[in-house]
Amino acid sequence: MVRDDFDQRLRDRLEGVTEPAPDVWEGISQGLARRRRKVVFRRFTVAAAAAAAVLALALLVFRGPRNDGQVEAPARIAGTVEPAGAPVVAPAEVPVPDIAPIEEQIAALPRQAVAAARVTKPAAPQAPATAGPAGEAPVAVVPPVEKPAVQEPVTQEPAATPAEEPRADETKHLLTEDDLPADYWTREESSRSSRSRTHTSQISILSNLTTAASDGDLFYIPSASHASSQTGKGQAVSDIEPISASNAPKFYAPLTFGVQVAFPLTDRLSIATGVNYSYLVSQFDILYKKVLYEGAYNQLHYVGVPLALSWHFVQTPHLGVYASVAGAAEKCVAQRYVFGSNVASEKVKGLQWSAKAGVGIEYWFIPHMGVYFDPSLIYFFDNRQPLSIRTQQPLQANFELGFRFRI
Amino acid sequence: MRETSTYTEAELISSCTHGDKNAQRVLYDRYASVMYPVCVRYLGREDAKDVLQEGFLTVFDKIGTYKGEGSFEGWMRKIFVNASLMHIRRTDVLRRTEDIDEVPEAGGVLEHGVLEQISSREILDLVAGLPAGLRSVFNLFVMEGYSHAEVGALLGITEQSSRSQLSRARSLLQEKIKELYHGKR
Image 1 (tube, chains in turn purple, orange):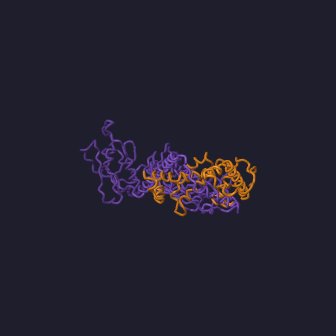
Image 2 (spheres, rainbow over the protein chains, first blue to last red; image 1 turned 90 degrees about the vertical axis):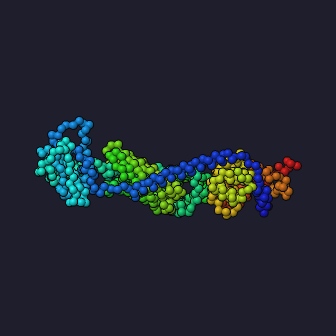
Image 3 (spheres, helix red, strand yellow; image 1 turned 60 degrees about the vertical axis):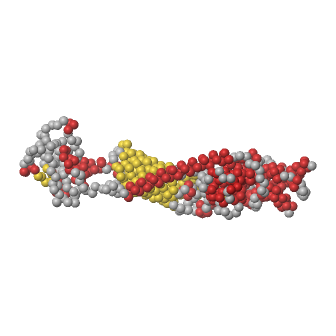
């Protein structure tokens, strides 16, 4: 009783005591400015990633018109066939042979449709009608696939002999498959494969970096879900409770490594899947068996399977640009707390689901190996996973770097 | 900049939530002299300055989470108490403190009228001058109203140790109060 009285009298004297404080406003002001800069940087990176994601979606939705079998203007190849014995012209005046478009046009047709195409044979009677002087692939002017029967034949007049009237039996010639060189289709397949090799099956080795790191400007509210999701096993992690003390939590940038395999679905669409490993580290205060531990480290190990769809809107032998959307399911295979001299580890129930959208660019510096960079925006759904940057800041800017190998 | 007196507490909280620098300065001016003694009680004057700064940064970070339940000053006080306790743990002062077993048990009851002769600031200095372990237990039990079990959990000591240290803290304070009182006479 006497003690209680002493305590009460002391409390009465000390409560409400004021005393001029030393001026620490300057330090507070500088601390606030530092935190504002971090918030601005984070918002900027998230906005940039959001813009990239929106651009990616826009490109996916509003991609350009496709060339559905329509041929290009035949005039483009008018100068590519030289009649045998034609006068030699200065190199500067020789049109550069450009047979690729017509090859593509032929290839786009059913093989039987080739027979309906008509060409004008060059003036020289002995020269093969379907091959250039150097034996290049045949030159044919092909009507659109949709209307092969009514399409007027397009004639080609060699520039060297504009005034000559071709003989009747040489003027019109029906191009049949027999007119093609024996190895035409083989060469064509090879050529197509070469041109579209930016979109073959690939293996990617990747690493991720996100902007999601924080050293105090995130305020977290510990939730029972962070502790209840763990599997009970002895005293371990289930005895640990993250608490909101005066020390700000610190979340380090997550790291991801993985291997993915991509397969083409169409000439521009591909699907990719693989295995990813992610490592997350956080530092915050915990109560372990009712004892406060400041700055405990929490390590989370996730293994996941992503599934991504990519639309390749730029494909050249060396450069590719694409937009992609993806989803992933990740399993936390281990979590580990390190506090003081104690270590506690356990597996975690449930899966972490996420969705991602972004754009990417790849550069093939040799035919079978390249590098790529995928900035994207990633969202982690609330799946009652342990406290981490993913639960505190579900929307993150993500930067994926990696190597790609054609297989 | 608005004058300190022109902000109501609700306006001040709302403005600080939105990051208004003027309001933050006003809040600091209004509460620094109240929170500083809290830090001094736990840490002594030397370390209290650092924790005062740290505590205000935490207040501005978390002010959006204040829901109006309980007094705002009480909410702030908890933040400064937590900041002080963290500082104590960070500096490991509890382990470095002098052997508390050397402190004698209470030598008698403080006579009525003695305490009233000592100013609040002198009492504050006496509390701040206690060994760190005793000071922490005394503040948490007497000033904040925690139970011995809670004090033990917060400081990482047993409940029995909390009781023992509180008893020694009382004895030491009474002894020093008596010395101060007799020194004045």
